[in-house]
Length: 202
Image (cartoon, rainbow, N blue to C red; front, side, top):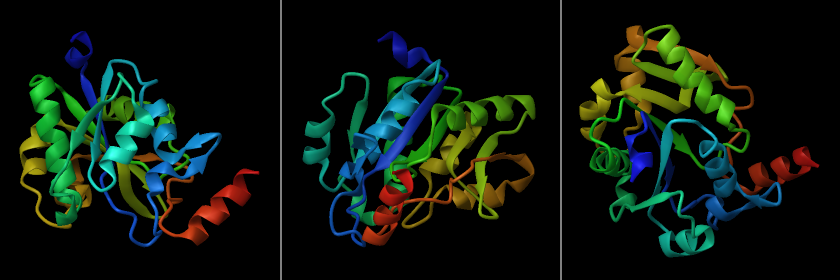
């Protein structure tokens, strides 16, 4: 399929069981859609990219809800082993679909203010500054969405347990460009977070 010749793979990590929320955060209603559909629709607007959705807990529910031909579903049966297992699953799938892929963006489904511009800024700044990692900057930290050049794929595949992308961002600080993501600090972990988001959005 032609789309897999694209240069950037966007991997949305949506495998968690939303334990603090008590229901699947991926399917929370937001903007006449859901949190996950919002993230997907924004990712699909990015030119020369393809999308992989890593599912885990509630994967049947989520896949049935989406039923999209534009998304490659990748089920992580080891989702309980932490974020690293989903990153490994996503990168493995990306390399299977397009071994020549130049970069990947790791994103999560519970940052409601993510847009295609956030993704595109990561790609643009990485090229402009000639840096192998472009990380979103908010609340005095660097985090998701984050872009990694293919030279880091091997290290991403070696992540274990609760380790996430931040490990590599810290390790390779000299090769990181930070890209401002306004409201990137807002994510949904609890009912209180969700209530604030809904009232904020009205």
